[in-house]
Image (cartoon, rainbow, N blue to C red):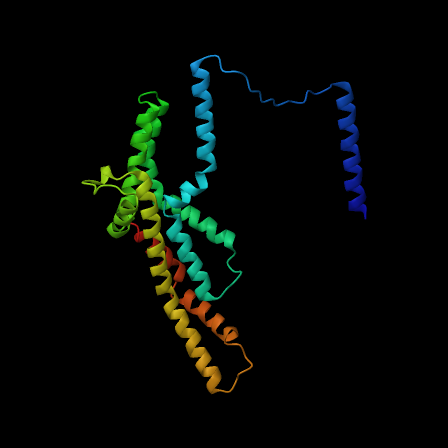
Length: 251
């Protein structure tokens, strides 16, 4: 009770001091305004278009991060791991997403360093124009996606786009590479997920057979198989093997 009274007294004292100070010196409150005026020069129109383009890019940033990086494969594999273990709420989805994000940053770091060196820094130093910065910056991303994309998936998207057969990789538009890359990433993620499922399914089958042979019909097999699957995953150092295999799977 003494502690509560002390806290209440402290709050009252702070409020009195604040009100007294505010009465003596009126502190100005900042005001943020946003106005729309008529463009009088071509530069004003260009600036407005640049702002709209930047806002569009920022709104599409999550989709760009998911569809053009290693995030898709990593999060798909983590989802299959969670389903194979049978732990519906552990680890939480936020942990998986956070770990997938940081692994994505780790895998994409060499590509982003190339973008920074060849496009961003020269543009900030006014050595190249915005168009040249985009052309140079998209090259490392295209190279990364093409290394992970199957020729079959790439040929499918070229065919669907009604394009002529490209002679080199530079002839393939970026909007064709991105969906082909996404399809390839989903395929590889499902393949890894299938491999992860095999040992855990075997444990479920063995536990179910043993319980049925012992006549323990009322005991759910999940109650017995779940601790065994977690124990197996820990004994084989599953996180080390999984993360190492995932990172090494990117060429």
